[in-house]
Image (cartoon, rainbow, N blue to C red; front, side):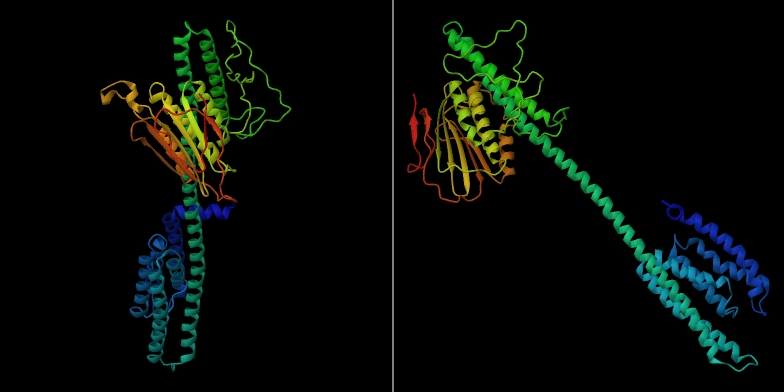
Length: 485
């Protein structure tokens, strides 16, 4: 920033002080030189006073431009009519300054009024000069009078033109400043909105991970405790499931929290990318005094190893193809789950598959927590032309399974249903959750997807376990279920 920009900024901040100092200096100059430029019939004292009165209103030319311009015009009219002084140089140059200031700093109607004054003033000067020639020994000559009027009008027009240019530049600067301020406010608002959305997303992911994993761990721990004395193998299988679920939840939490901080080796790696094939995976070192889980004789899945350096292994986010894993895990937990897929499965837009997986995961978690003992669950995944529907029904008792007759002691609805509805709204879908007729609870999630290239004509066969009550409503022509007792 140069000296001119600094001076202009300082002058804008302290307008009255700068104008007052300049006006005082101008008054001193015009008061001293007024006697030399005044007519012979006007004394030096009167000339000095008139000059000071013409220049003095310029102290408010930027703070109160309308009042200053009117004051200068009135004093000039008094000078012309009362004292019959057509031009009093250099004091009359204040008229040009006043014209410029009211054009730049005054409202639109004010500088239009000043234009009218700029016409009335020169005509008054011409009339005063004409009457002075009439009362003198010289014959009146219209040429010099007209030339004087034209010169005054020309100077006023130039001052008005410079003022318009300056006004337009000031208006542009003000508009740019306002736009920059609005953009800053909008940027801050967008940052707050993005932060709130990211917090909600992280809260949904953490709720799905923690609630699902803890419900599995609690169910397996309770079952293993009761089966420890009668069936040690079942207790061993329960401990293996607990270990596997805990490691999987820990890995998911590490991947989720890894997005929020930069690591030394993968600071910019986004969530969900597959790790390079050449990266070695180190198995965790056993803790002192702990016994590694034995292989499950009943076919339980092996525990997923976690890296020794604390970084979770990278893998793709779960999607609709991983629903079978949820069903298998629910069956391992003791739930009676039957499920069917209707229609031709096809590629989903980014994020829709993860949303279907999370909704199904939360629905099964709610079954474990609220459905009561030995519920029967029916899952249906229906692929349509322009939408895909996921439905999870059970025949449990819902919140009544808590066993308390007092409604105040019943467990309150948490963030699970709220998170599912938020996920549905993100992709333009709908989620309906509530009690079923005849008992139980139903969750129905419908999300729009791009139209299929070919119509869905065939169903997909999946092994299932028969539900105890209330099977899901399906299309008999396209749905096939296989029972597995």
